[in-house]
Length: 161
Image (cartoon, rainbow, N blue to C red; front, top):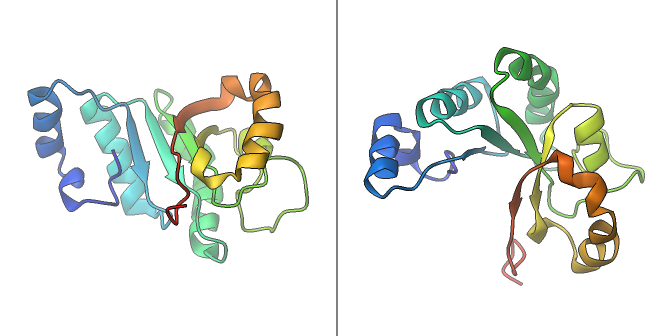
């Protein structure tokens, strides 16, 4: 459930009622790429109320230093305070999944997400070019499986290609 896309998704009672009415459990709460303290607190509250076990965080846009700093300064503390919740960072558009030079304010390396920030990966295949996904990532998927919290599957890129 993406709490940043729809105002109604922030209303715990409303979402809980929909989930029960349609017998559709909610397992993942997805935050925006402009994450701040208020939004992460809401996501954590939703996890506990809806019995979701994962928060996926959209990686901030390239020059969004404020959000990048908020995530990197707070993620380890939030994990310690909420041990029953898995925190995952979604690979950004045009991800580089291996250890090539990357900009400082960017989560573009999945290995860094796992090792440095001790987070799971929210893999969005539409953010990887097909060559990288098919020829590089799939060959090494065994190494990443323990760290994948959720996989977003799509046959289109973010721009609809």
